[in-house]
Amino acid sequence: MAVPVLLGVADALLVNGVSPGPALDVSLLAAGVLPFRRRFPLAVFLATLPGILIGYVWFAPMIALYTVAVRGAGPRLLALCAPLLAAGHFVPWPVSDLEPTAYRENTLTLIDSCVTAVVPIALGLLTRTRRELADRVDDLVRSRARADQLLADQVVGTERARLAREMHDVVAHQVSLISLQAGAVQISTDDPRAREAARTIRELSVRTLDELRHMVGILRKAVGDTPDLTPQPRLADLPRLIAESALDVTYRADPTPGAPGPEGRPEAVERAAYRTVQEALTNVRKHAPGARVEVRVGAPRPGDDGLLVEIRNGPPDAAAPAPGLPGGGHGLIGLRERAQSLGGTFTAHPTEDGGFLVRAAFPGHRPSATGAGGCRPAPDRRPGSPAPDHTGRPGTVPFGGLPGGMCAAGDPA
Image 1 (cartoon, rainbow, N blue to C red):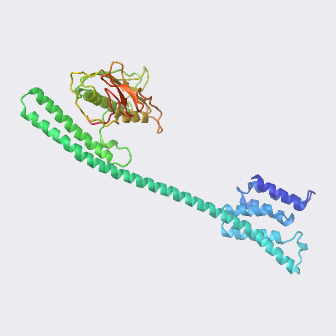
Image 2: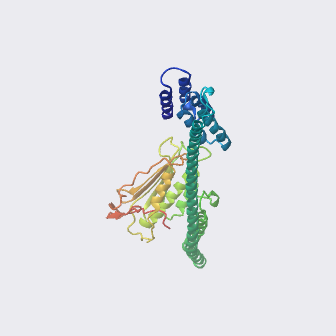
Image 3: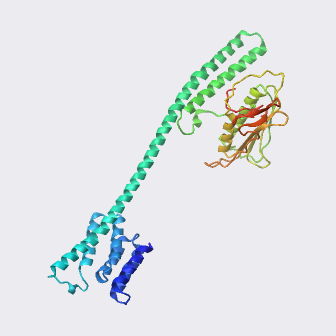
């Protein structure tokens, strides 16, 4: 901004000296209006013409004409401005000093005037074209990035569909066989307890197939939320989950005076709390058979509208047979990520009595898109750190896996 003005002032003083007069005044005026050339390019250019006509300054009108070309003037306007600048340079002041018979001098002055008028326009058009090309390149880069993202989403969607088909073909077949076998036992046995156990197995198998169908539908969705594919479980379903767990569970739902009103907590919070309890009970069956379990659901503190879920199990019963169920080693990581995405916290660690504790705290409001919460690392969860299992023996815990009463959630029960 200051450089053009300084050039214009220097040009005015070098050509007209420092003696006051009309020539110096119009020359300084031409330099003084240059700061407004970007907002009023045409008006500033017209204001500099007296400077080149009377004061014989070049910088101010040439800079103004360059700005007119850069700011997007059309061909007609540039075709009008160029002759004006050339005329201001060619015609002397006063006009009576013009010598029509001085052909050589007039020709050289005319060529000089045309160059003075054409060069700013050429530089301005070049600069404008360069900027437009840079914008086009940026648009192309963004378009290519969007195309790459769409392609990646398409690949992910295709892979999800393939995984969904594989999961459905493998898991659904096995669960269907379990259901059929349980139905056969239910019909053929005369033992009431065996018949009731077979009926429970068959009901759980049917429910597992139903949830599998919903999850397959979710996997086949490339993007977006799919609330219409469920009903998803909520806190009201916890008593049924605990009753069907076949574990010695003590369930306590504390009153939450600070909880939200009739609209209840966000569905995502209740679903996350349910999944936390479900995974904790699954891990107790896997790694602490026969252990007593306490499940507590309530507010983190009096008057708080948040939700605290705590699952604590004791040491395993040495007389209870180990089920030998497989584990994937990713469940607790998934629970931690789910809690963090909702702005809550998650901890899981062994207890002093050889049991295990899982605690998840969720806010009572819907968090922002960026998430607010963090998660304190559970003790003895660093890769390679020793931690006791349920038998009290020290062991090495890989990241994502936990010793004793809890391993990673997400494993099939």
